[in-house]
Length: 69
Image (cartoon, rainbow, N blue to C red; front, side, top):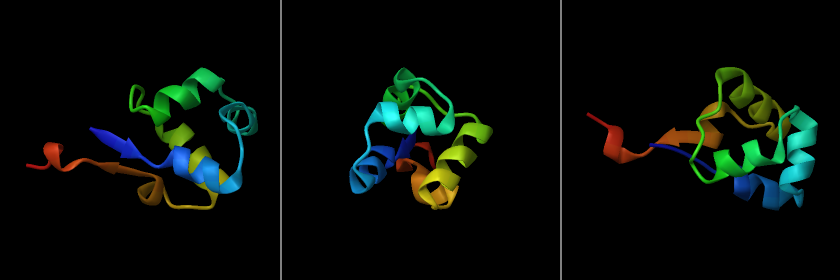
């Protein structure tokens, strides 16, 4: 499973899902789904989030140990 800390990064910046969505060009529902691990973002979207938060993709997203082989 792909995990993320987008919600934490939003809280640090004190922005809403809607504000983040508008900043990177997606819907609020997309942000909601990513934060709740119901949607795996495309490479392009992950890179947009990375640039927005000034973090590496690996700082925002990681695989849970259950997927490690």
